[in-house]
Structure formats: C-alpha cells, structure tokens
Image 1: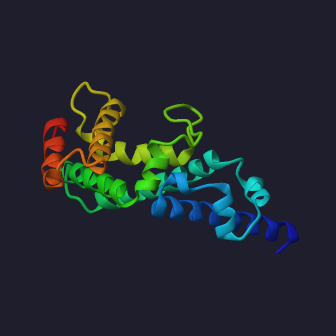
Image 2: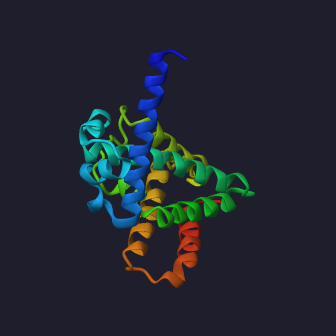
Length: 192
C-alpha cells in the first residue's frame, strides 16, 4: 500500500469516526449537544482536524443524513423483499419506515428536519437520497392506480408516513392505534 493510499484510508476512517460519534451523541442527547468542540473531545482529535473533514455541524448533519438514507433504503427493501403481493409489500414498507423513524430519531431528524445542506428532488440530489426514494417507489409505484403518476403517489404516501412518524414521536397520536393507522393508510391510499 502506498503512502497516499494509507493517508486516504486514515482520512476516511476519521470521517467515519466523526459521523458515528456525532450520530451517537445526537441519539443520546439530541442535536443541540453535537458541537465541534464536543466531537473533538470525544474522538480525541483537535477541532482543526474536524474542520479539515467537515466545514461545520451542517455538513456533519448532512453526512449523517446520507448514511441514514442508505440504511433506510436497505431496511425498506429488506422488509418488502419477504412480503407476498402488493398489499403485503406496501404494509411492510409502511411499518419498516415507521420503525426506522422511531428507532433512529436523531438520524431521522438529520434526514428530514434539520438543514444538512442536501438537495432534495433536484438533479443534484445525492445518490443515497435518490435511492431511499427509489426504495419507496419500488413498492408504491405498483399500487398508485390508473392515471396516477407513480412518483407523485409515492410523494403523497411518503408525506403521510412522515406525518405519522413525526406526530407519533411528538406524542400527538395515541400509540395504541399505530397499527390501525398503517392499515388505514394502506387501505385508503393504495390501489390493489
């Protein structure tokens, strides 16, 4: 291995450590607790080292969001792969999405609530975000209904899932009705 390759590997390792530490700290204490100073202390590097990888917290949030998008896409595809038939796939997708949001609140915030400097729904949207949307579209596109654009239907269904995830997390919806909400969403929006 060349010196350059070793330096690149070490740099990539530091970036992964910064992102993992930011994510861990955010999940434990919230994003307000994530500062470059605290990250530098936790990973035992100086703040200038952090700034050599990320210009600031915004870029770190963006990196966490991209990592989360890849994880969510994998979770959605994993959940739908074992499902038999369109209704079962859409139901599995909805549950997996809501489970991901509940199990990874800080990552979910990085993806959809906080400014990570990422472009959504544009040509320059990063691939992990495009792939997460594609993971939704793969199951939802087949149940959009006649004359309804699959991408548009996926956006509306995704918005409903996001609303359920956000309102549930905020304690605005009674948790005992969570499963009935998923069933209602699938029954009323998806055409089988």
